[in-house]
Image (cartoon, rainbow, N blue to C red; front, top):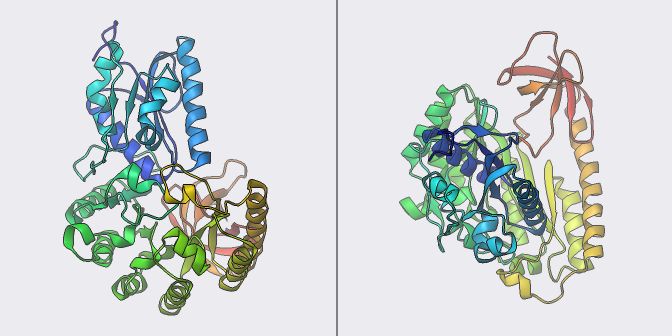
Length: 449
C-alpha cells in the first residue's frame, strides 16, 4: 500500500451526520492508523479523501452530495489522489452514486466501511470497487481500534446498531440493517478503557437505546447496563440518548432516578402527538401513552430535563393536528426540543401517502413551533437564576478573557445549550465546577464559579 515515493498517502476524512456516524468514522480511523496511514482533518493536497456520508433526510443528503462534489472538483484539479465514499448515502444509492459522479473511486456501505483499509492499495492501482452489503451486519466492539474525534472528556459509545421499529417515514432499517445489541461486557470494557483515557462524560447512543438487549438477551437490559456503567463512571456522567417512548419500563426509570452520576436528562423523541398522525407514522404509541410516560418521568425523577424531537408537516397533518401539537408543546413545556420538517424519502411507506403538506406550509408551521419553543426555553432558563449548578467545562472561550464554555447535566453535547462560565482560575476541558447562574439567554446560561 505504497505510492511512488514509498510512503503511505495521507488520508483526509470528513464525517457527516449524527454521533452514530461519528463513531463509525472513529472506528474507521482506528483501522487506518493500524495500517500506518496518517489522518488529516484539514485538507492536504494529494491525499486520499474519504467522506462518511449521511443520507437520512433531504438536507443531510444535500450536504453529503455537496461535500462529495467539492472533493470531486479537487480531484479534477489533481489535488486529490482518490475519492472514497461510505456511510448512509452510499448504502442507499450505491448503484447510482458512482455513475453520477465519475470522480468517485470507491463506494462502501454503512456496514462495510471497516473494509476500506484493505482496499486502498487496489484503489490506488485503478480498481473501482463497490463494496456494499445488502443487509448490513457489522457491529464494532471494545477490541475494535478506535480513534476518538471528540474531546477526550466527552465520548460517544454506541451500544447497538440497526432498528426494528419501521416508522413509516424512516429509512434507517434499510440503511443500518436489523437491530443488534453489543454484548454488555463489550460495552462495559469500552467504558473502562475510555475512563482510563480521561473520559468524564459517556454518551450512550444507538438507533433505539431503550430496546437494548432484547435481541441478544431476550429482555430489555438497558437498566442493567446503566447500573453497571454508573459504577465504572462514579466520578463522571453517563448520558442516555435516542430512546423510544414504547420501550420504557419501571426498572429503567428507577436506575436513572437512583444513580447520582446518570444525567437527569432524557432524549425522548415523540415525533407528534395526534393519535391519527402517530398511527400513520407507525410509532406504536398513543397520545395517552406519551402523556402518561412524561408524567411518570417527572414525578419519579426529580429535576429531570426532557428533550424531544418532532416532525412538522407529515402527510395528513392538517390544521387540526398541527394545532393539537402546538397546544401540547405549550402545555408540556419540554426542556429541549428539536423540530424537523418532514422529508419525503423514497423507500419508506410514507413516500406514497396522500395529503402531502405543501413546502411553504411546512416552513410556516416549523417557524411557528420554533417561536413557541424559544419562549418556553426562556421561561425554563429563568428558573436557574440564582441557583448553583454543576457544569462540565468543554473549552476556553477565546472571545472573552477568564471565560469558559461548559454544559450542565441537562445539556447534551452539540445539540443543547451552553453555560458561559466566568472564572479567574485556569480551567481545562473535563473539569467539573459549581457555577452560580447570574444571567440567562434564550437557550444558554451565564454564571460564575
